[in-house]
Structure formats: structure tokens, C-alpha cells
Image (cartoon, rainbow, N blue to C red; front, side):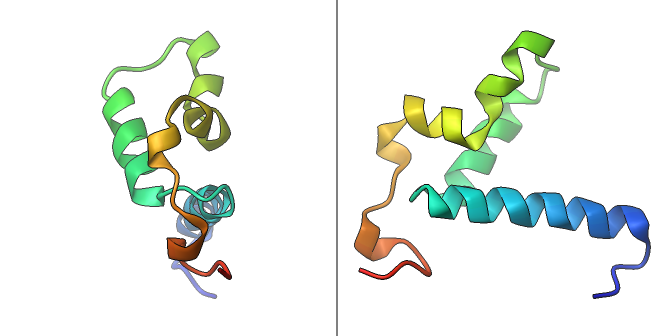
Length: 76
């Protein structure tokens, strides 16, 4: 797929990877990005970066999880 250059394609791949990882973990990608972008308004300390990963966000926010039957692309 042509993205207009190397950098846009790489950035898109990173975003798609995050979205699919969050979906596989049965959570809402929009809720994650809303939360992480709010956290990134101020640069995090290097020790805080790992806490921003989707898997760690899901561990701290069970309310963000979808039910298995309502997750897009997941069989019931």
C-alpha cells in the first residue's frame, strides 16, 4: 500500500498495531487512545512510559474491557 512516503506508512503501521492489540485484549481502542493522548499532554518520565502500553492500561481499567460478544471482529 502506498502511503506517500516511508514515514507515513511506518506511523500508520504503528497505529494499526496498537488498535489490533487493544482489540485482541478485548478493550475499546478509542477509549485507550483518548486516555493515552490525555496522558501525553505532558511528556512522561522514562519510567512511566511502560505504564502507557495497552496491556498495562487494561490491567488498571477493567471497565474499559468489552464483553466478548460486542467486540468487533471477535466471535461470540
